[in-house]
Length: 203
Image (cartoon, rainbow, N blue to C red; front, side, top):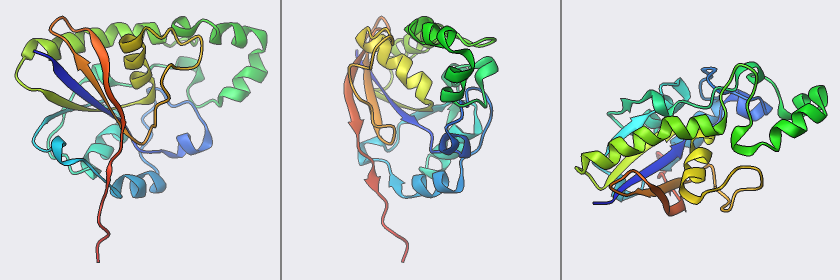
């Protein structure tokens, strides 16, 4: 039996707006982020499904604002640990570290910040989660609130993308991305860039 995993990135935070790398740093949604998520409504076929979420507050807040009453926290959905780079701006790191930073970025899946984890390691912690979802066989669709780094790693697992070049599919970070998971936990793209419904304004 094939399961489906629908993933949603949390709404914007102040660090997102400033271009800062967040990683595990627990930054809440900004006022703009809260307003943005409040305007969105899940498509009807997402009603009455099970939801899991990253433990970080920006993900949990996003789920609540989308009207999800119950979410099970799963630590495997936490954002990439960016170590010493958290709170920094990517362009500043490129200026500071020069050629060393350029070479690190070329490593793709093995890009590793000091004190952090690589995208390959994120893929490795996600694989048991996918296997667990596949093993339940109880439900066709499961929803997850998570982070950009996690969704990029899911795309890597689903397509073989090694992250050394641009992704094979351009993802809309304000959309829903659905992946299929077979009985052995292998993942493939199912339906990416699914648009949210717009919530009717309160009169």
